[in-house]
Image 1: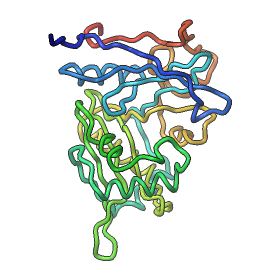
Image 2: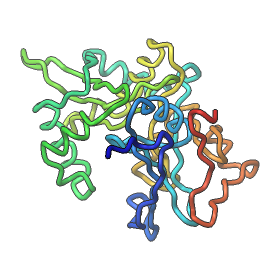
Image 3: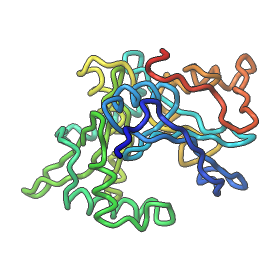
Image 4: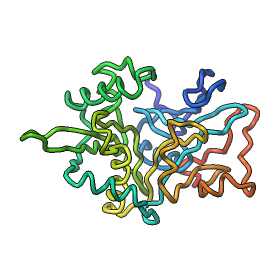
Amino acid sequence: MRHSPTQHPQFYVTAPQDCPYLENKVERKLFTALYGSNSRSLNNSLSKQGFRRSQNVLYRPSCSNCSACMSARIPSKKFKPTKSQKRILGKNQDVFRVINSPIATDSQFELFKNYINKRHAKGGMSDMDVDDFTSMVEETNVESRLIEYYLERSGTVDLISFSLIDILDDGISMVYSVFDPELEDRSLGTYMILDHINLTLEMELSFIYLGYWVKGSPKMDYKRRFSPLEIFKTDRWISANLSESNEVNTYKVDKEGHGAPIYLPAEE
């Protein structure tokens, strides 16, 4: 007998493991699977509640006694680049953008491995092979795209960076980004975010979802360079500057450590 999966997503919590961002901390994640015709609306709804997508899973931190990881987004229509960011845009005027379906290629994988080996050699993705990479890119049942950036050098056109994104009903979620670590003077990580802000405006959308910002983590500090920055806290999006004042208290986790409530699409 064949059973149809429930229409309501089931949520689970991972076992505790060492936190990759803060020393002497452990992390847990609350997660649910994406499947069926409700995937797009669920991805839209939960992305606005601090969740992130990895292949066909949505997750957000669910840590006991810690709420340092906060989902961050940039309101594209309010964003004003700094002088430094304008210089980065100027440096990369010769770079051009191509938007593709989420299909993995050899050139992407080569760039990915070079990036991981130079920037995150001890990270959890260091042992990913081509099949793992292909799954990361192609296993999606929501509206995803690959944003590729190319540069013409010595008569050849080279892939220098790319970003896997989800297109939400109110913005773009940058799922994972890679850039050529040899081109450090171009600040490609910053450039990609700036160009994604422009892409959001071209698509008449409102936000760039950047993933998590962790105060006190050098790995995440670059996100504070984009202003205004909003973070998801106390069950709503607020200014990152306001979040550091005494006016806003961190949402207290419940006894299971699950934190803010979850609103499903039908409940909004």
